[in-house]
Image 1 (cartoon, rainbow, N blue to C red):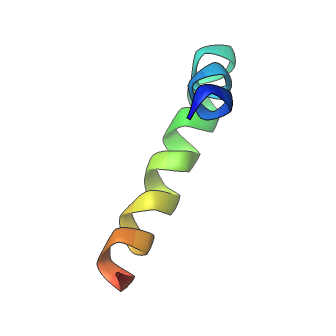
Image 2: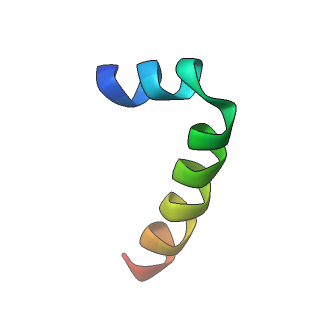
Image 3: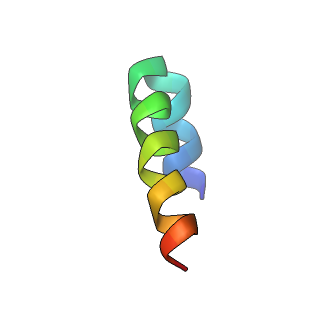
Length: 29
């Protein structure tokens, strides 16, 4: 989680991409 948080702070685009990736993962689960 720490690394993910740092990536989000470093790049908003990275945060958006991670969010889009988490959506399908959550639906799959």
